[in-house]
Structure formats: structure tokens, C-alpha cells
Image (tube, rainbow, N blue to C red; front, top):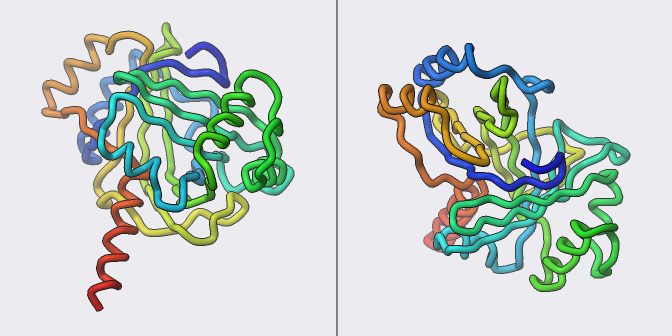
Length: 237
């Protein structure tokens, strides 16, 4: 992690039960401490083309993929700052660029055809992304409750637990409350290990001892698959 707005790291995902989560959190206590924000609700709106090209390509697991979203921590008022985020993945390394601005300005910018709405290098990258992928529009809202922790000696090593993951493809506004259809079973969390290097030995040991293996998981991907199942069900009626 290079700054609060530029990230370069590996992100490894695990689907775990509540019992496994308690075991992991117990093992973490000597080595990690909670993020300063503690438990938070993260709200996202994902942008895509009319035919969902970005998520369809992502689910094909290419060497390189990218996506655009706008994020808030909890429901936002129009004057609250939110993050416009460009996230790329190349050969297992995740690169994230983000810029912060008031919600009303972010939504106006993303809803317009104009370029040059954001300053700096990150703004230029987001501008180019919007120019390259024509007709981007908000497609899915995804929210979840997150607990985040970081290593006491190396804050580039982080572990997050996401639960109550919900999605909807209507009411696409960060100013609205978090609600929608659930993605995970009640007894399950999504754990993400985020690191710029390796995973500490104590963590690899607890994962191995409890039969916890990495998985491929996309919140937006799961929402898209649910949308497609709904389309097929309606077509069959």
C-alpha cells in the first residue's frame, strides 16, 4: 500500500464459517489490531456497459481485468465525501486508484459525458477508463458489514471480514439505506487477506490447521449471476 489513495497488493479471499472466523480472530490477537474505524458498513455502486461487458469479462478470469465503482462508508448525504475507485488486477496483483469528492459531484461527473472532471493523474486514469468504455452507467449496488484488522508491525498486511453482503439493481444511490438480496448464507463470512508481500507463518498455520483454502469470489460477479438467473426465469414464464 503506497498511500491512502493508491494501493498495490495481493488480495486473497476465503469463504469461512462463523466458527472458523472465531478461531482465526483468536489467533490474530497477538499480531493484529482493529482498524481505527472498527466495524463499518461499506456501500458501493458498480458501473458497467449496457451489456455488462466488464463483469462478464471479469468472470472469464482473464490475465488483466478492471472495474469502476463509487464507494461510501455508510449511507452518504449529498455533501459527504465518497470515493471514485478504479480497480485493476494483473497476474494476481491488485492495483487500486481512488479519488475523494462530495457525493453530488461524484454522481454528476459519472453521469456526464464530459472528461477532465477530476484533477491529477488518478483523475486522468478514471477519465480515460470512462472514454474507453462507452456508455458506462450504474448497474448494481452492493453493501456489506466489514471488520478490518492490520498487523501491529506491518500495516500493509490486513485482514478483513465481510458479512451481510447484499445487492440490488434498483435504487442505485449511496444516499439510500443499505438493503437488498443476500449473497452469502447466514453462517458465512468472506475473509480477505491483503498483503504487499507474503502471508505471515502464523496465519498460514491457522489456515492449514483448519482446512481453510483460498477461493475465487466476486461480490459483483455473484450479483450479476443472480440478475441473469432472474432474466432466464422471467423468459421461461
